[in-house]
Image (cartoon, rainbow, N blue to C red):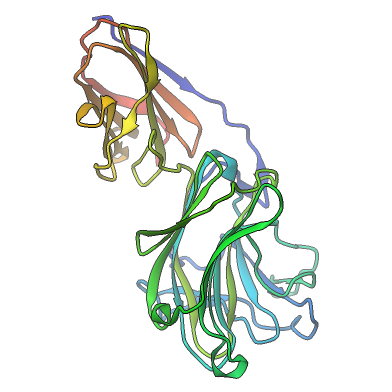
Length: 357
């Protein structure tokens, strides 16, 4: 058998900012409190320095508990992740959010922050005061607002990014009453090509017309803003450092990025294309025709068995290909190469990634 396997454990640079690893992932249902978050109250207009910060709500949630943004009508609040993320590599941010209808100032905001939190003014209770802002600001964010009867402003849903030229690229739904008083699932897919997709309850709402500004450095995610006259809650925040596309799979809860490239007998070459099927742990690629599927790939969590993630694959081809699997949490890589003219054997690598959990 001439099938060869190459493995490399890429030595990820140990970079920490805000006491968090740059290339990590995040999953928080707030059942363990708020230790993974910096809590800020905004005080740009004055008078909010002693406001209550975001807190845990033990009653509401999907399921409970959840994050109570706890902002007021003067300025908002926010929770910033202690981890920061290299969004230029592609990433997905998702969360559940509830915004109540009400008399005034019910705003829910979330996404990739456009700045690091201002940690220059620490209160005795461990909360930070940011007197340079009055609300959350995002490089890629979603905002659901209801200003109710007082301001006479219709409810709205805003999807927005800051683009390469510094302008705001956004889509605004000026009548979002049907989203109020209920939990909804929001997701932002920051693609590797710079364009950003926005989802509501798993349906694609909009893809940005411009590319996101790639120059901001590693950034946290943040969630706020105000719930003056009704609850605004956030739950089940997840950040995955694999952005699904037409040429890469994101498997095992989005932790593993899977790509394949091929070369045929006429020296034609290209990337494998993802078949729009599959599951959390497995997926399919085609090479030459979307109706002719070439490869099945699985990445399985066997941490409870042998402290490894397994890679299984089967390809019905004799063209040359290289299958590349990346653990986005550690930057470890496993590569599998099939030479041209060789009937591809099955891959059953039960020691692929020693990167548990």
